[in-house]
Amino acid sequence: MPEGHLLHRYARDLHADLAGGRVAASSPQGRFDAGPVDGRAVVAAEAYGKHLLVRLDDGATVHVHLGMRGVLLRHEGPGAPPRGGVRLRLATADVAWDLIAPTTCELLDDGGVARLVGRLGPDPLRDDADEEEAVRRLHAAGAPVGVAVLDQAVWAGLGNAWRAELLFLRRLLPTAAVPDEDGARELWRLSRRLMLLGRDAGQVVSDPDAPDERWVYKRVTCRSCGAEVRTAQLAGRTAHWCPAEQS
Ligand SMILES: [Zn+2]
Image: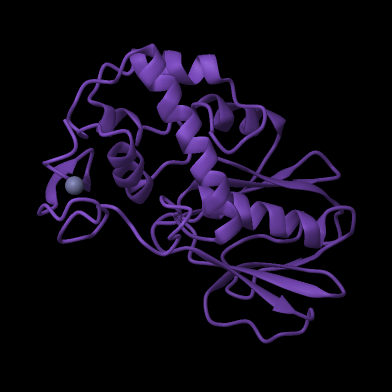
């Protein structure tokens, strides 16, 4: 599933391509009513956690959640033939963006956007995120740290790969209690620092010196110490950790 760093990357690229101009909107697949979007000017594209928001000049917002299989494809030129299953195409004179297989593609008014954002916790990738609120919500979650960080109402944007790598770097077992205030703050700041690198790289980055490597996520042995990586289901996803270095 695309995690927050990829949604922020999409938002940045969409904003660069679309903001300030009018878009031709269509639904080649026919499963989205693109009429209200067609011909509107895009004010901004932004991400909030794993949600993408494309704000239009009439106050409406296109809300997208990619879910497990959704993708966004960018084509040079507005006339590229769409692949099958394009729910929404947004095109300018220069580019076309195709949205394929999202779990959500809908138009929201301001109230709808406020309700959506109101369900989400602070997003480490957003400059307006409130660090104190992030620490408070992590402690208020009343759950193991590996459950709390996947709860989008606690922190928005982290998924399974970030959970594994960030908890390894903080030497926290996924099943351990949430760390104390200093520990929670360190985890938040580490999340922000690495997820920003991940946004720019287009992938999870947990070792800036080896951006293609992982410490424990989907590994057989720990990249740091060689111990056999343990796995268990936690919050509906497979958690990965090093039994020698995380406690
Ligand atoms: Zn290890």
